[in-house]
Length: 459
Image (cartoon, rainbow, N blue to C red; front, side):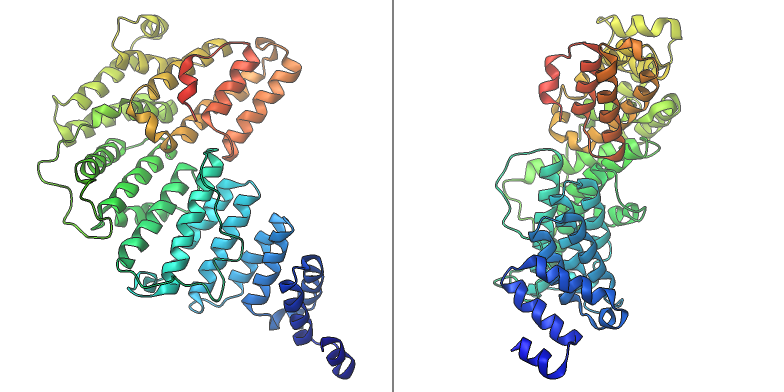
């Protein structure tokens, strides 16, 4: 029929689109993309295309595993939609773009696209009974899980979501379920948590997290508290870090005591009364903040001490811990190494001295020993269960010294091969595709220096 129509009336954009649609359903994806390039190369034809023509081409590119091409097409499809119209389709196209970027192996960029989409969610996405918005937000949470699982190389059931599913014109939840407002907030909070752990997203994340931190839903507050802590690490653990740590412990303690009776879709009035808050049990999270402070270590510790006094009191365990860390970091430089090595000193004092000693750029072997010591402390308590919050941010702080160390190649064994491998690991961390484990292992391999058993717990 299409051939006859072309013979009778000549070629046209409409007929080309129809042909592409037929071939799309036959999964003749290479031909679909040839027609697609023909359509977009003509300004007149391109102007007549609707978002679903883009979507077909994006799905075809994804089925051919042309991930970069699929990303460009899905994002172009979203951009082709005028502001204020077809918001659901536009959002779904961005979720599809995030998925193909993830499948292509670039998890930070996938998270960036996803968070940008979530920050533009319209208010109607939280409306009760809207099965289409419900379905696409559930799919967003699943894509978020796919990205997180791929980045941290976690095991788990394979997802059944395919590129194009989020923007499908027939997508909707099978039935109306109550709790859309809660699910909307949880979607936003989980995506923002992913973005802050990977250090991506615009500055407007801060305002959005402040809003979610005051949510009526406990699970949302817990996600938001984690995201705010991760954002603090990314920003160098500046003023407000102790507040973020206390808020995280508050939400975690609240969740712990109410977990058995918790209905995450039911609102509450805030933290449970008489809640016991013990932020000192997360000493590893505190040490991660010490590392992320970098050259501002002493200034930040002094600020943390004042924050902790105001939040918890002068005699609080966390306040005393910060005080001892500051004591270790403030010792004269000639005593720092001895302070770290003396196991009779409190761990808090040793960590402060180790962090300060690292700033003095010791030789490569000593740098690795200090980084290994601090990392072993970070993962030695319950903080290991939440290391996604700080792993990349700590790794980035450590990575800064290895570029300079690599300039003296003769510190390393087999420098011709080990130094380039180390620098690749450093670059991976800096662009957001590496992890703390990758970095420490590359440095250890380059130095021929073993790492301790603590590495079994490091991502």
